[in-house]
Image 1 (cartoon, rainbow, N blue to C red):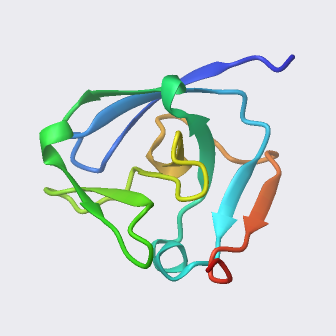
Image 2 (cartoon, rainbow, N blue to C red):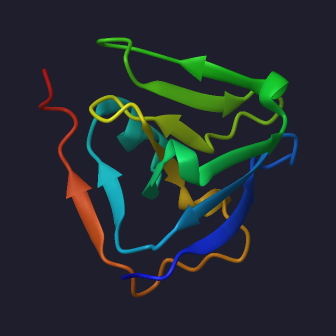
Image 3 (cartoon, rainbow, N blue to C red):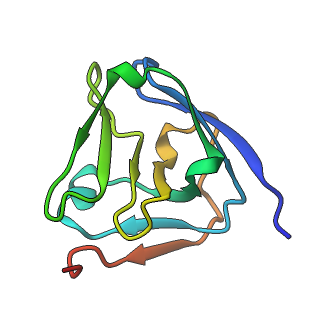
Length: 118
Protein backbone atom coordinates (compact mmCIF):
# COMPACT_ATOMS: atom_id res chain seq x y z
CA UNK A 1 0.00 0.00 0.00
CA UNK A 2 1.32 3.41 -0.99
CA UNK A 3 1.62 6.19 1.55
CA UNK A 4 -0.69 9.18 1.10
CA UNK A 5 0.81 12.65 1.31
CA UNK A 6 -1.16 15.84 1.95
CA UNK A 7 -0.25 18.83 -0.22
CA UNK A 8 -1.50 22.40 0.01
CA UNK A 9 -2.11 24.28 -3.20
CA UNK A 10 -3.32 27.61 -4.49
CA UNK A 11 -3.74 29.76 -7.53
CA UNK A 12 -1.13 32.48 -8.14
CA UNK A 13 -2.85 35.21 -6.07
CA UNK A 14 -3.76 32.77 -3.24
CA UNK A 15 -7.47 33.59 -3.47
CA UNK A 16 -8.18 29.89 -4.16
CA UNK A 17 -6.60 27.51 -1.64
CA UNK A 18 -7.00 23.74 -1.50
CA UNK A 19 -5.50 20.52 -0.15
CA UNK A 20 -5.15 17.09 -1.70
CA UNK A 21 -4.20 13.65 -0.42
CA UNK A 22 -2.31 11.56 -2.97
CA UNK A 23 0.16 8.72 -3.24
CA UNK A 24 1.83 10.34 -6.27
CA UNK A 25 2.20 7.07 -8.18
CA UNK A 26 2.08 8.94 -11.51
CA UNK A 27 1.50 12.32 -13.10
CA UNK A 28 -0.27 12.88 -16.41
CA UNK A 29 -0.23 15.16 -19.38
CA UNK A 30 -3.05 15.40 -21.91
CA UNK A 31 -3.00 16.29 -25.59
CA UNK A 32 -6.53 17.75 -25.83
CA UNK A 33 -6.86 21.28 -27.16
CA UNK A 34 -7.14 22.96 -23.74
CA UNK A 35 -4.53 20.93 -21.85
CA UNK A 36 -1.91 21.52 -24.53
CA UNK A 37 -2.51 25.26 -24.31
CA UNK A 38 -2.38 25.42 -20.49
CA UNK A 39 0.63 23.04 -20.39
CA UNK A 40 -0.41 21.49 -17.09
CA UNK A 41 1.13 18.50 -15.38
CA UNK A 42 -1.59 16.78 -13.40
CA UNK A 43 -2.15 14.30 -10.62
CA UNK A 44 -5.47 12.47 -10.46
CA UNK A 45 -7.23 12.54 -7.08
CA UNK A 46 -10.64 11.32 -6.01
CA UNK A 47 -13.08 14.03 -4.95
CA UNK A 48 -12.95 12.68 -1.38
CA UNK A 49 -9.20 13.41 -1.34
CA UNK A 50 -9.57 17.08 -2.30
CA UNK A 51 -10.67 19.96 -0.10
CA UNK A 52 -11.22 23.52 -1.28
CA UNK A 53 -10.24 25.59 1.74
CA UNK A 54 -11.08 29.07 0.45
CA UNK A 55 -11.97 30.99 -2.67
CA UNK A 56 -14.80 28.95 -4.18
CA UNK A 57 -16.47 32.27 -5.03
CA UNK A 58 -13.35 33.21 -7.03
CA UNK A 59 -13.51 30.09 -9.22
CA UNK A 60 -15.02 30.13 -12.66
CA UNK A 61 -15.44 27.14 -14.95
CA UNK A 62 -14.85 26.58 -18.62
CA UNK A 63 -16.47 23.71 -20.49
CA UNK A 64 -16.26 22.72 -24.14
CA UNK A 65 -16.98 19.81 -26.50
CA UNK A 66 -19.29 17.50 -24.46
CA UNK A 67 -19.54 20.02 -21.58
CA UNK A 68 -18.77 17.22 -19.12
CA UNK A 69 -15.33 18.16 -17.79
CA UNK A 70 -15.21 21.30 -15.69
CA UNK A 71 -11.97 23.27 -15.96
CA UNK A 72 -11.62 25.65 -13.00
CA UNK A 73 -9.80 28.99 -13.17
CA UNK A 74 -9.30 31.78 -10.64
CA UNK A 75 -11.29 34.87 -11.68
CA UNK A 76 -8.60 37.13 -10.27
CA UNK A 77 -5.28 35.76 -11.55
CA UNK A 78 -6.49 33.38 -14.27
CA UNK A 79 -4.54 30.36 -13.03
CA UNK A 80 -5.88 26.83 -13.62
CA UNK A 81 -5.52 24.87 -10.37
CA UNK A 82 -7.68 21.82 -11.22
CA UNK A 83 -10.46 20.33 -13.29
CA UNK A 84 -13.17 17.74 -12.78
CA UNK A 85 -12.46 14.94 -15.19
CA UNK A 86 -14.69 14.00 -18.12
CA UNK A 87 -14.36 10.21 -18.15
CA UNK A 88 -14.19 9.89 -14.35
CA UNK A 89 -16.21 12.86 -13.02
CA UNK A 90 -15.68 11.82 -9.40
CA UNK A 91 -11.98 12.61 -9.87
CA UNK A 92 -10.06 15.84 -10.23
CA UNK A 93 -6.99 16.48 -12.30
CA UNK A 94 -4.89 18.79 -10.13
CA UNK A 95 -2.20 21.03 -11.63
CA UNK A 96 0.89 19.98 -9.63
CA UNK A 97 2.55 23.32 -10.39
CA UNK A 98 -0.02 24.85 -8.00
CA UNK A 99 1.14 22.65 -5.09
CA UNK A 100 3.40 24.22 -2.46
CA UNK A 101 6.88 22.73 -2.20
CA UNK A 102 6.16 20.05 -4.78
CA UNK A 103 8.93 18.71 -7.00
CA UNK A 104 7.76 16.40 -9.83
CA UNK A 105 11.24 14.96 -10.41
CA UNK A 106 11.37 11.15 -10.37
CA UNK A 107 7.58 10.69 -10.60
CA UNK A 108 6.57 8.82 -13.77
CA UNK A 109 4.58 10.88 -16.29
CA UNK A 110 1.93 9.20 -18.43
CA UNK A 111 0.74 10.93 -21.61
CA UNK A 112 -3.02 10.61 -22.01
CA UNK A 113 -4.81 10.96 -25.32
CA UNK A 114 -7.53 13.57 -25.04
CA UNK A 115 -7.78 14.92 -28.58
CA UNK A 116 -8.92 11.53 -29.87
CA UNK A 117 -11.85 11.27 -27.46
CA UNK A 118 -15.23 11.45 -29.14
